[in-house]
Image 1 (tube, rainbow, N blue to C red):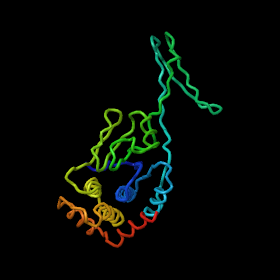
Image 2 (image 1 turned 90 degrees about the vertical axis):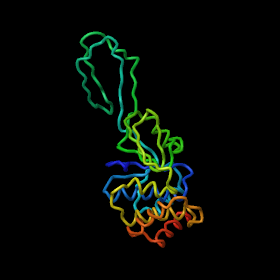
Image 3 (image 1 turned 60 degrees about the vertical axis):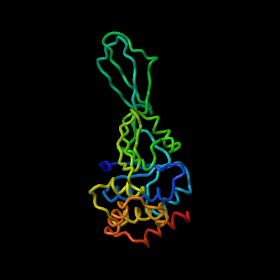
Image 4 (image 1 turned 180 degrees about the vertical axis):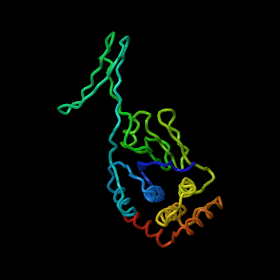
Length: 243
């Protein structure tokens, strides 16, 4: 399953994020931006992680808070017949007018729910629980089911509250491979390839950790064929470690 064809995707940064995860997330961000998508990253107020992202992603767009942009007003009609609804904004207030043919509205049942944000897809990398994203995750859970989630490198399961899908293969050794798989047939550019190569080198500790599947080396060939270099990858790792 490929990454969704999102127009306004939002990528979440989890708490206690590892270096190789930041690099993999940077690759997802880079891939969206190369497709001219209005992509942004959301993370809790953590200056260290934010500075690290700015060090490796030029002109990265970061949010520390997700504002709802869709609301639902619900009101029990009981036995009333609603014939018309009108609204206006006046003196800083939203006024709604209900024309009732018969019966009476139950005004005590009035509820206002936050139902969505401006983002058409929420991208979750290497985590399957919104609690791992701190206040950002909490704010998303308070929204209703209009949000669409997509997991990369994780078998995402948000039960029936949200629409979700994911790319995950338990036979792959590294998160970078999971990300590369999610790109499917999209053209891989050099910056994205360098992020993925850096993620592989960091996660495997320069291949000091045993690799169980030859698929990793096939993926690395794709990265090198797309212009990735060991030098550029190490430079990215060093920038993150220094921050």
